[in-house]
Image (cartoon, rainbow, N blue to C red):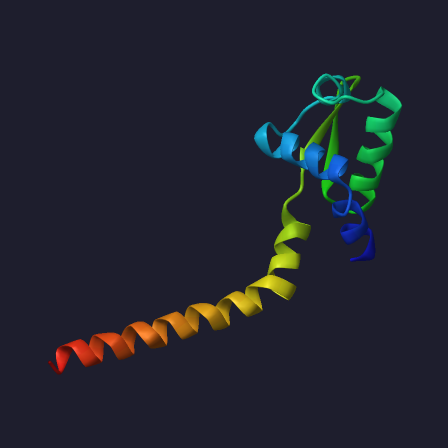
Length: 106
């Protein structure tokens, strides 16, 4: 998890993830053409994203295609966000039911 949060902490890496979300399966050259940094810098960021399991690669001939792996982000949601979201949804549902009961008694 530490590698995951470290990877997500950087704006450039989040931008790369956004690019892969919009069009998964891009080559390094395609990603570099959309970034304002050197090829070496993009490569370095992609390696950190791979280590965090946020990006997976598939070799197609001599080309290395980069794909977004949404599973780790889903795990973050389930572990840290979803449980808080559930309580809020339950509270809203309880409020809705109470308001519906009050309006039916009028």
